[in-house]
Amino acid sequence: MEIVLNEDVLKDNNSAAAYIREELRQSGTLAINLMSSPGAGKTTLLEATLSSLRDRYRIGVIEGDLATEKDADRIRALGVQAEQINTGGGCHLDARMVTKILSRFDLAHTDILFIENVGNLVCPSGYDLGQHHKVAVLSVPEGNDKIPKYPTMFLRTELVLLNKIDLLPYVSFSVEDARRDLAGINPESSLIPLSATTREGMETWLEWIGQRREAARRS
Image 1 (cartoon, rainbow, N blue to C red):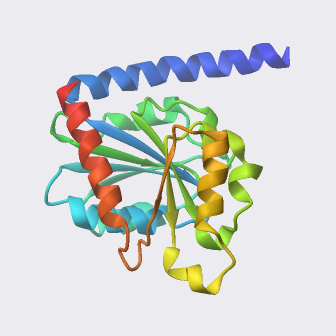
Image 2 (cartoon, rainbow, N blue to C red):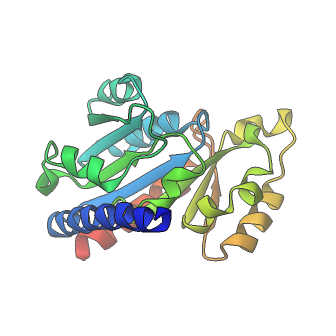
């Protein structure tokens, strides 16, 4: 019975994800699902990203948290539309939640939609939100054990942003070991070292977004 229940939940989620995907296709909007553990710096990274791209693209943000609108307020302070989803204890967003809030965005006039998922390295990776791309954010202070300990997350993401590289001189972390571990789990994935604080490496990430935005527009 438990297996059947899981299948039913995912079936409903996948139906909602298919609806979102079609809405994005019709509008030509690029959707990126950002996932990480709490404290990896997703919101700070998003702020730095938006500061660089908001004059070039029309951007919307969906913020996922258990409670409060603190992160959404940070995004709104940049002049970017942000809509909050509070899960009330749930460890991830699902497509049904996103569907309910999607109508608040004028997708026909939205070039890029960022979805900042609930901080968790396990649950979010298993749910399709209709996005074009799943991106994981890993931070240097978390240590080198996260990629091998949470393989499902990194197996299902095509890009890993290694944040807080400005702290490399102060913590024990090997970028090369992270690359090797990622390649062992998901050879198709890439890793971009960067710092949302100093902006080192940000240009590579911004170029990646621009390339995917053009691909979404053409499709």
